Length: 196
Image 1 (cartoon, helix red, strand yellow):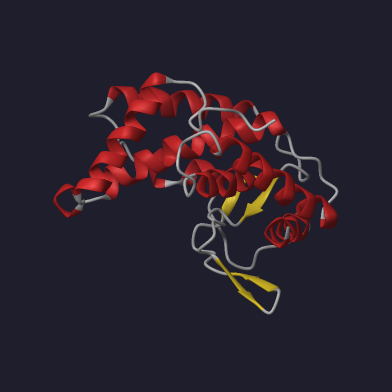
Image 2 (cartoon, rainbow, N blue to C red):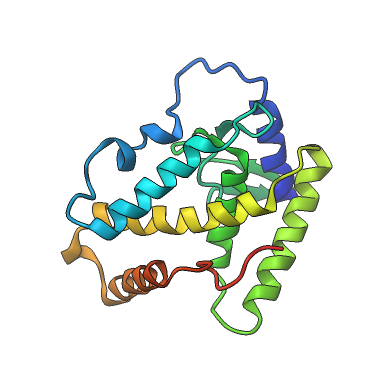
């Protein structure tokens, strides 16, 4: 719950935050700005589809603002019950539901696939959102979160495919990237289910 509370507070503050130092907007990420995908028509088409979709989404101050952009379990400290968020290097202007989706996506990656995965992810999501709504009354769009979970999966695969040195990846990492590619090509929810 504290994890959700922390993000809820960040999003609530972001609605009125006036940045001293500029942060990028989602479409300014290098994956969008550079022609890095020209050699991979599948990825290139996937990204063009997301760009088209995102440009059509409403972006009111209640839905869109400065997000952390990478609030997984390694980007906060917990000391005597007090949670402190760290590593704002990926912060950008994006949809708040994407920030939630990032957390759910990366948390789900820590649970082995199998019968208990869906139950564990849904229990986490329920507790996270209970904490979030305890400090921030904004109602998140579950459909949009599901959409952004799949978006994050594509983002993670693309990022690691482009910026990882092939010779530096071990066998497990290479295999994991191949599995990510297969799931992208197969379509459907990347987790195997939607958050409901």
